[in-house]
Length: 456
Image (spheres, rainbow, N blue to C red):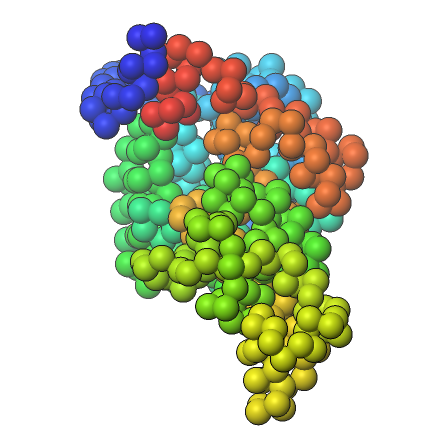
């Protein structure tokens, strides 16, 4: 009972807890500084840093590093990158025993600052190398292990991040609390890496370990600093590019994508068929048709047209679609058929055939469905709310916390991966890593409180 009550106190309790956790980190960091220590504990294989292109990979796995991450890093190595492997893990020599023989530089550190704290230590280490040797780095790729990548799509991701002419690149972007690039995979070029504003950003960034700080001062702060320095991000999967990719899908594929969206979206529309039905109803002339009040199609039309007034009752969409496809039923030929008054008007006075009208209605209905998908994704994190569409269009990556964030149901993760063509071997590893993050429905007490208050 007490935990249920506390969960409801998020507006008051979350800021208090946030300030408390930040204060604890500041005290511990000050203690390190007084003792003449930094957040870096150990540096292994520094001689392996031989290239002017570097991948900074940050990992904090529950177990041994996933084979998909080793595969991705090896792909970068094959095109001339050095790997700087960074971890906050308390026992890295044990957890990473299987990969310590790789030709990577290993930087192990105290657990402060989450991924951006690790990015900071690695970045300042590279700047120190430049100061000591005078050699500058041409391309820096930042990756953390919070995302799983699909084998077949990795070459396209790497090619985008490796573009020589791009100063700042990302794979997805977020739209909540300010437009910013998803920090789980991004890259910066030489000009951006050595820009004085960006160097100042890393020097001033505090390695505090709360999720809110990592997002606000890390993800948001870094993108803001890059933009203020004049570097506009080149994002591979903007919503504009996603729309083009989705419109190339068949109607049945779009319906499947909509059904794979998060539960909140599916509850809103009831069924993706309703979106297409609503467009057909409009083509037939909604004022002449009767449906129960407050129908799903009613609500969708209201949303699409952005009107507050109540729409008059309408007829069921599936029945109308069937009637249009048939085109030749006695009712459609009946001059008294009010449902087809607008169809006959366009045919007789505008020269638009019934078959053209029906195909046009269906195509616009498809676009309405795509627009609603993208509007839902636009409400916040693209990699989360757009998890299913990104997989279906071939983006080739999925966040490992999609179950924890209630984007995908625990029992649906294997189904989603299978339907998007992920191989059985990859599916086993990816679903295992995702489910290892935890099931939100099984959380109790303190763990549930931290998750509900966005601290995990």
